Length: 394
Image (cartoon, rainbow, N blue to C red; front, top):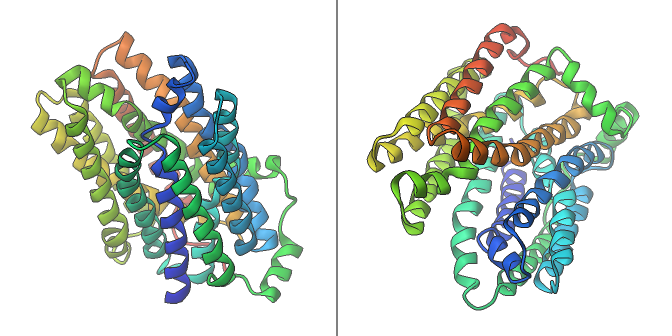
């Protein structure tokens, strides 16, 4: 594993996610200044994930053909423009344009993961991808707090700071980040890379190796994002928790997830196969969601998020790593992009599901539903375990 390459791409991911997360707290409030309804705000929040659903696999596959570095430059330039549009927005139309552009170009995490795959072997890949996940999580821990403070000046200020961070990231990639694929290697991959089409990527769902992992990714992401999207509303309705208290709990989740991805995953990967870790993560996440669903008080609620954060950190590292071991090298970016796209689809579906169950059924329904999904995913992984095992790529 090349430590210089690894440090460089981790820094790129951290800066990118720090800028992105600066504007998360102010999105609903900014939209309200343009008299947006609750439904419109929901559509605005979902527009990013919907656009990423399209953009992520295309960026990933393009990086297989043209190299990781140029695609990172293009995607982060798109993010930079998106933040500028957001900062100068004078209408809801401009806000939607900003979020859609950022979603189309914001699938660069899959490109960063492909970069890690290029500079690691199968033994060290889990650790490398875990560190990428930790940088991702650390950006989300710091960004919302800083963005909230900056929004006290103006809703535009966090967007302009985010655009400055994106521009700094462009300079970092242009002048410091080496290309992970050599010219000779890119030429070899270009000759073998499948056609650059979204339909070709969807065929991966029918593949006996990649299909089970992608379906598993969809099921656990659907359950996990339900928690993420409605936790604040759940905490308010069930326990009347304050915004500050809820923020501390979510920060704790982020810290546990970062520690898991930066340190624990690497330790566990040296002792256990990917299949065992995926199965354990699914059961641990199911247990956490069940405790969350029926938590009788705030201390038990806080306790419930510990296994959830641990399992989320494990699964979000191990599943992408396992995917990279089931395809040819020229398909790594494409399969990681498709995985990101599938995860993005759950960010459109889960908030709607979670909100409906919380409002129409009961406070315990979202957690119970998520746990049921995870037990189904666990049974599915047991049935297809032979397809998730040892790496098959050269």
